[in-house]
Amino acid sequence: MNQTKPVLKPQKLSWTIINFWLDAMLLVNFVVLQWISAILQFVFPAGVDASGWKLWGADVVDWQNYQFVTLCVLSVGILVHVSLHWSWICGVINQKLFQRTIIKTNGIDTLIGVGVVAAILHLLGIGILLAQWMIQKSP
Image (cartoon, rainbow, N blue to C red; front, side, top):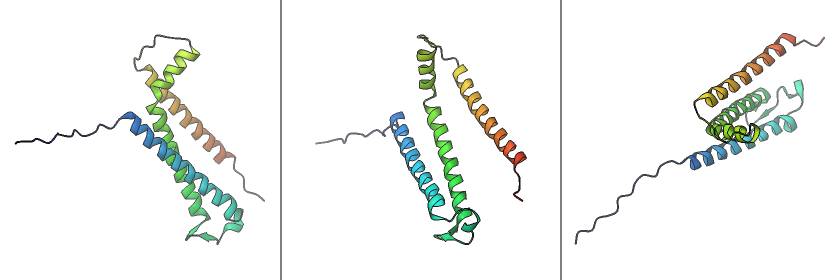
């Protein structure tokens, strides 16, 4: 008897699985950011008193760098998360805020999203430039 084994097709990666793993990564990243922030706030001495102290071979500046990198990774993850949900966000805004039931998708929503991201980045840049311009050394 000639028996053939069923051919297994490779599983497609669904949007649900992608969203699940992205959300899981965001949760882990958020918890790590909170943990690092708590270490900086509660474990290291405040201000210049932290100079000379090390935790697991890393000084306070190293831990601040870990915090900033973790924050940047979280920000990129949130940007990807919002991008994956952008059509849903636009649909909710159109239906609930503007009371539109027929929604045409002609790419304008994508341009609006890119514009929102550009505006946020410009505001952050302006805030950093203002802070750099206004910083003062204590007497």
